[in-house]
Image (cartoon, rainbow, N blue to C red; front, side, top):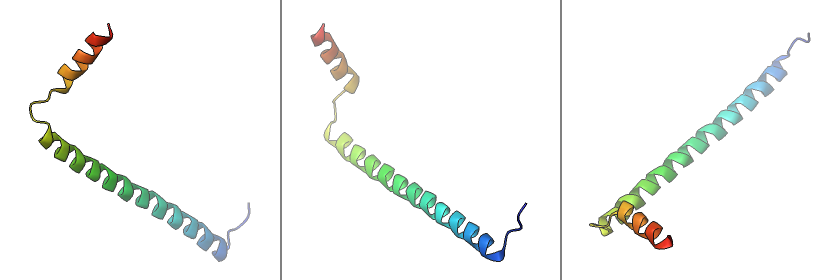
Length: 65
């Protein structure tokens, strides 16, 4: 078994640090996308008062029969 040198340990730490940055950045982007989707849904929901999605789906399914 080879003994790791200080440089090898630093390279390993740099690799781990870069991977963590990528993972954390992806999570932040995902959270931002989810928050944006929620805002859009809330805005659209305000425009469609009285509209029932289940009734609309049932109507379309019955028309296909």
